[in-house]
Length: 350
Image 1 (cartoon, rainbow, N blue to C red):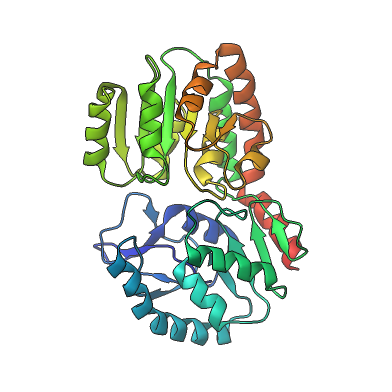
Image 2 (cartoon, rainbow, N blue to C red; image 1 turned 180 degrees about the horizontal axis):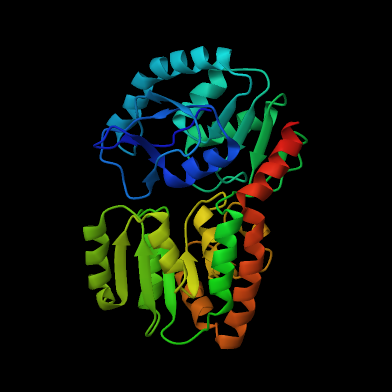
């Protein structure tokens, strides 16, 4: 497997990786993972693998600044050597797109492979050129098996859910969801990176248009900047910034939230959406990527920049409407178990 999943070394020398991806690979039983090793301390969401796996580190690169993009060019030869060496030994190749290292993997490997495209298969305004190139490449790489979260009419491109729940976790979340009620104050949750692209600024703008609602913010980024922004909007007392959280702490926020607010500019299918729905949280999200198709009428989907529309959507929920959609959301979450995902995947790959 080749991916851009960040990995870290703990003070005790243990390798840990980005939690949601590690959980998925544990379910898949991946044998070798080529991915960047970052020098920073691991974030709370990082976790070790629970199944046997050989991790092969490569130098990290990427970012929005010009020097960050130039650093990617410097990393390509080393990435390519490592990928070629391990690809020759592999019985099955798995590439996770879109990312700079996955573009290199597509260029230096051939033949049969399973490629998971986690971005928006339809594209979006302002999409990076490298991302667009990868998607076009996957459309024409007919010998590969491509999976996405979005519908496709191509015979080698298959639509699969983005897994994030074990059957035990689903059962626990549903039990909590069954006992929940919609009572003031309305609790809204934003879960994701604190970046303009993901929509934290828009989420705060939405809350500023709502009277009495409370917003929990879970995600890593420039906390001080966004806390100051919330204060400038006059909503500082109604917003709680939790930072990046381990899954258990995030579950506690799901268990008390009524609505998940995610006005992001681009998504494939965010795992936090399925995690939240398992607890009966109703999504109020942007109509990007696979989100509208997958939700199929549960919650509300709007253009990511429609701040007034998001605020009106939150106001539109009363107890009866929320209770009905909360139940539908919890029921829909069963699509996103690892067990359901691996069963569908092996049927495609066999």
